[in-house]
Length: 112
Figure 1 (tube, rainbow, N blue to C red):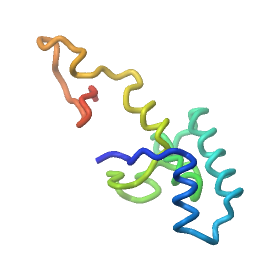
Figure 2 (figure 1 turned 120 degrees about the vertical axis):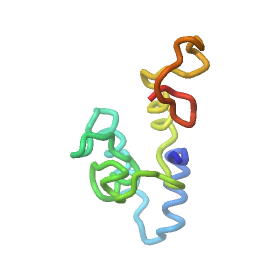
Figure 3 (figure 1 turned 60 degrees about the vertical axis):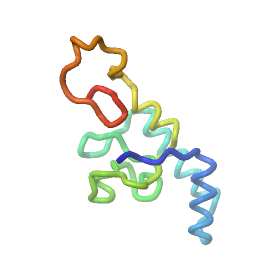
C-alpha cells in the first residue's frame, strides 16, 4: 500500500478536527518547516526521505522510523510530495519496449 494523498489545507483541517486542542498556527508552522526540510533534501537518520506529516510532530524521520511499520497503509502524506516521488527518475512500464522490460515494478507500474 501507499500513502493516501491529501492537500496541505485538508490535512490541517482533518488534524484540527481530530485534535481540537491543537494550535492551528503552530501546526501550520511545523508542517511548513518539515515541508521546507523535505524540499531541501533533509533525510531521516536511516537515509530515507522524511515523512512530512509525521516529521511535523516528532522531528525529521521517515515513516518507518516514526511508526515502526514498513507500509503506510491508510496514512496521509502531502499530495504534491507523493506525485513527485512516484515518478522522479523512474520509467513507467508502458513507456518501455516490451523486449526491454526486465526487473521489478511497483504496483503503479514504475520501475523500482
